[in-house]
Length: 261
Image (cartoon, rainbow, N blue to C red):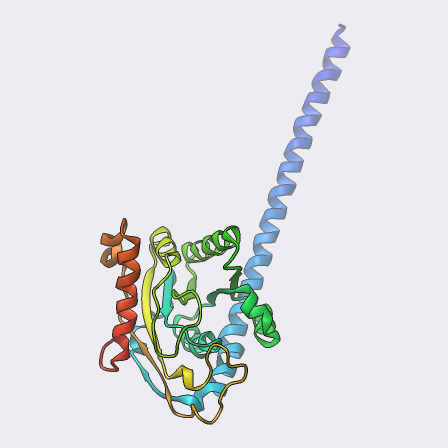
């Protein structure tokens, strides 16, 4: 092989290295551009949630509320928070999220059943335009796993998630057993947990009732927010999932008494 051939090979190798560097730089630029777009989209969603979505819902549902208690327990401008609440109606998330959004100043993501949300065109539409639904199919283990991991990721990124640990709507003002999903989410994210109790929502809507009872529930509903539960407080339950779920259920159940926060 001549000296000229060797030089040509070196030039080709150098060119390949340069091409690789250019491609790598291009990929990094594309990633940065996508991250900038994601941040822009999140800012748009935050604006929609804080100044449009939450305020519209507050205006719509304000006539139904008689009392709000414990709102000082909602952490202000703080992330990595799980709000847990009893679940009687499809309206539960719409009743709660406006106040949680305004207090935390963050998008409040809602873990829910995809089939239930999709079965109602209005709820499906709201979920799409607000971008805050973490939806999964309860009968599909893989989809459930994906939904739980999405919650954990949102929390680790400093997000706020609303969860109904009963897993489905129950009998009005009756709290069923909590599912183990809350155990996995809480311990993998080490999030602060805030219990919430919604009272008399069954007067407005409940499972099996297609249309809300608009007049029967006027000035009858109330929200009671309990004190936050930090990781240090619930960490003794690390290897006790059933006891942990019952502990959280009891914390929510205690809020039935309006004097307990």
